[in-house]
Structure formats: structure tokens, C-alpha cells
Image (cartoon, rainbow, N blue to C red; front, side, top):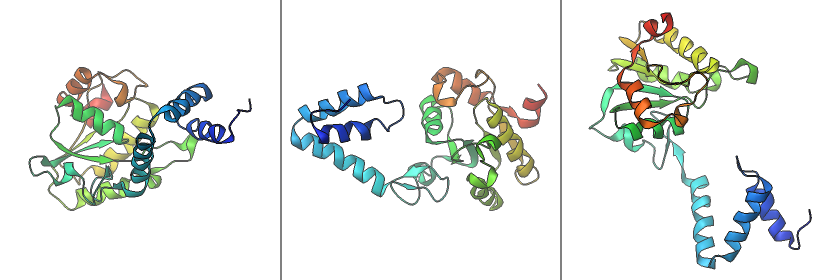
Length: 205
């Protein structure tokens, strides 16, 4: 449906490209922005611009960061002998909210999915192997979703890490099959982290 304003139509089109935002919701958001004070809209658009221009990826863990090394990797109070491997930034946030994990992270940027043409080389796997290869890592925790792709990725990483790191573990499956970490409640996810098992035992169960 053509709108009375081409500028409003363009704004709605752009907002509708965001995930989970349909045309109706995009229209409500655009009209809300139009009703706000000009300085509010400028502040909003400036925050989006700075997000796109300034946010970078941590050179250690591949998490998003405002500087070369993220606050988690740079924190001396964290356990630097432990790395928790996750799919993306949302999983880091979910695990941090449990307050059950004090080690470091490694963000893969996805999981192995042959159907989507995404193999290990399309993920941040080489960066993980390089970190572990430098020594000092006692345990790698595989904290990926309980999906076929997540399990495939865990299997690949376990085989690659055997003999390089003393212990490879996997979070306990208090998570439903097919579930993503970001959708799991904090108590269940916290227990899954605390009750993690060696990867080989998890596979045999």
C-alpha cells in the first residue's frame, strides 16, 4: 500500500528488514520516531551509526567489543585456563546472566551446517585452535545448542582438540533437543554449566 509520504514509506521499508519486524510493526516504530523530539531521533540514529562503525571483534575470543581485546578477555579475575565455546554473542550474554561461569569464551560465529554450505572454515575454529595451541588452557567447554548442527560441531571440535587440551567437556543436557541457549532459562542453563561432563561421556549417554 502506498503511503502519503515517500520518506515514511522508505523508513518503514528499512525497519521491516530487521528480523522479526513486519510491515505493521515497522509502521508503528516509524510513526513513534516521527512523534519524538528531534534530538531524541538524532541520538537514536547516532547510536546505530556508531554501533556499525565502531564495534569490532575481540582479537582473542571473536566476541563483539569496543576495543581490540574485550573486557572479559582482559579481566584478570577471570579463569584464563578455561574456554567456553559458544555459537554467538547471544550465548555469551545468556551464560553470563547465570553467574555460574568465570572462565573465558570463544565465539564461533555459527555452527557447522552442510545444508547451508557452512563448514568449519567458515567459523572461527582456527582462532580457537591457535588459542589452545599457545598453551595454558586446562579445559574447553562445548556450549552449543542441542541441535544436529550443534552436535556435529561439538563432534568436530572434540576430535580436533583431543591431545591438545587436557579436558574437553560439554554442558549437561538440561536443555531440550533443538533448543538454543538464548531461549533457556537462567537456572537451567546455570545448572547445565555447573554439571558439565567430559565430552566422551556425554556422547555415550
